[in-house]
Length: 124
Image 1 (cartoon, rainbow, N blue to C red):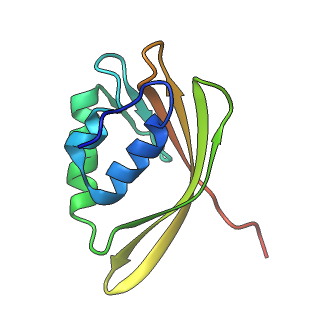
Image 2 (image 1 turned 90 degrees about the vertical axis):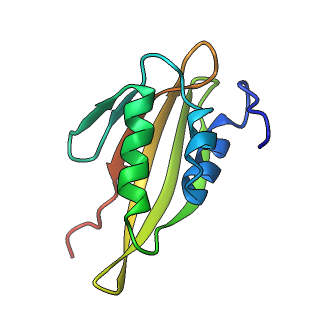
């Protein structure tokens, strides 16, 4: 496992680990104290251990889970946006969920806040 450089690459490492379901690696990108994850349904998960356990439970049970990262935008050393599509199978059919995720990092450079937003098509 490669070391995490807390000044650069934390978001990219998080995404790599998420796609690979590497929960221990993902945990190294998250602040030990004060993590908050806000989901697209206004659901909140607080704490590093709870968040990693949540991801492990949800994503490990999704058949055919894939993560396709389209763009990573670093606003500054503390704030990044990621546009991606998550895909998984429901009743044998692949479903795709385009998302935008806001990441905030603390003084230590590790992720302290994750906010997930679904991207939805406009009215036709």
